[in-house]
Length: 243
Image 1 (tube, rainbow, N blue to C red):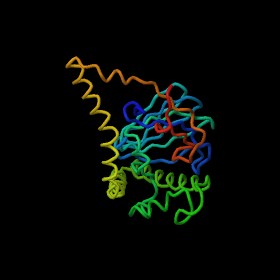
Image 2 (cartoon, rainbow, N blue to C red):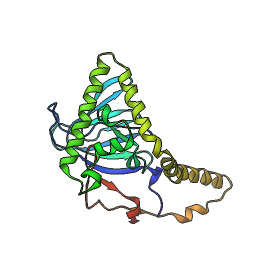
Image 3 (tube, rainbow, N blue to C red):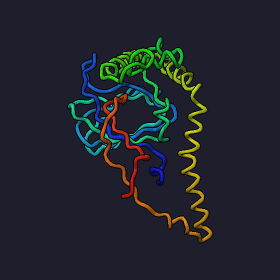
Image 4 (tube, rainbow, N blue to C red):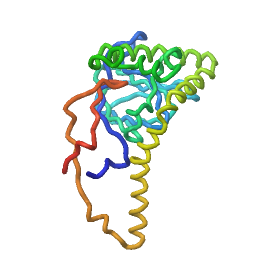
């Protein structure tokens, strides 16, 4: 089956309607270390809160809006009307699920990878039990606690706060980088290399790759998972069929 275009990931997202301690509703603030992310808003109304070295910002989210952000952008999806739904397009399919995303939990939970994983686990101690909405809410609230403190420190002029979080997130990535490299090389790099090979072939007048033309289709996922920002319906290219 042909790979999904551009080796990107695509998911349907219903942003959590759960209320937070600051009176808003929505998902868990987090950052991506290697992957850009794009929201295509399909329903509802909300906001994207972001924190970068340029400061705190809010972007409105209404149907038809397309908003994207690059690695290093701490972001939080806010669901203002309880009906916010977006299509998420992720750079480097597979990397976000492999640990590229780091939640803004307080520093005590960022000291090493096992400690972090315990803090953000959706199951019980040692991985016992099934993922639960209660655990998703608990880790969301923990991430908002850390995000709120990062924002407070940054807006008070303590710009080191953001760098400290980046440093901790980078350290968490260390043990995973070889696996990330393998995913990147077998996915985005391979797809890009194939385009280069096709350009070279066309330059020679060779159009043989066009004989492999095909249409693929992924049916709407029949189940959702508890994602960082909401109920996630990932479209798995391995489940694709002929159009």
